[in-house]
Length: 342
Ligand SMILES: Nc1ncnc2c1ncn2[C@@H]1O[C@H](COP(=O)(O)OP(=O)(O)OP(=O)(O)O)[C@@H](O)[C@H]1O
Image (cartoon, rainbow, N blue to C red; front, side, top):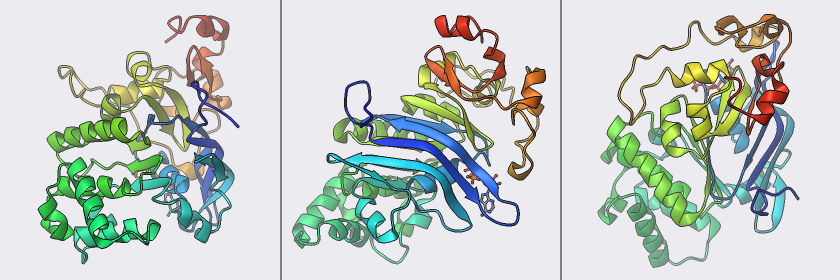
């Protein structure tokens, strides 16, 4: 059984996950993704629109619908001394793990919450599905406690989703995702629909709840600066592949991949003074017509000949990983001293 640095089993161990949109010309939206999460760890996944982030999230929770299909790899979850590979489980078996072991927070709570049910009824549905024998008062107590954790007063239990502010709805979604004490919460841009002040409040709340309850998080967003506040580690996606992965500190201060550098310089930092934003020239590629070699090469200011002919593989560079030919010649030096190149 694979284990993290502390000897604990990984909460999530994704191995060579490939997800395609099937059709006349299949599109590979996630290619050979490898990710591991330790208990209580927050992994951020960042990338531009179309890089495959949402596809990854729905594949991880097995909520994808045709034409999307997982065509390779494993999604191994570990909970209560058991390991289970979600790939290949039937819908009925998956239900045992949803909410309980892994839960999801979507981009728009308005799409995820039922508009015709009061908040209390929605919490009761989820809690009861996993603890059918729980008495009404206990369900109510649990709901009150969950809402309080995200700063929503008890009198809102009788509110309908449309009676709540956008920020409150998102926080209610987070509370609902935690209702059955999952080991892993998967979040797809849960702060895009709210203003910056609320965004930061939600980020602080997630950090506080993680400390209190110890769940791990995969948090997907296009906003790298947000992840720098929230994530322990960050994976950068481009054209369906992870092109760099490292600690938040490494990704911010010493990004290896030119794409990561471009992404970092495209967003205003949340704390530091505002500087000129440079952005990345060009647009992401069409996944059904990827160039040979590195998919970022046509936009890369540092591309060399190899980049246009051979796709670089994700490999260790110092104590982070990147898929970039710029480090090929300096492999030995970069492995010894990560500051040598970059
Ligand atoms: N229903 C679909 N049919 C065919 N291809 C699709 C479909 N949905 C997505 N794709 C392909 O998968 C790619 C990745 O889409 P995905 O939504 O996962 O990206 P994303 O990074 O989450 O983007 P965004 O931030 O805009 O949500 C798209 O560029 C597109 O080529």
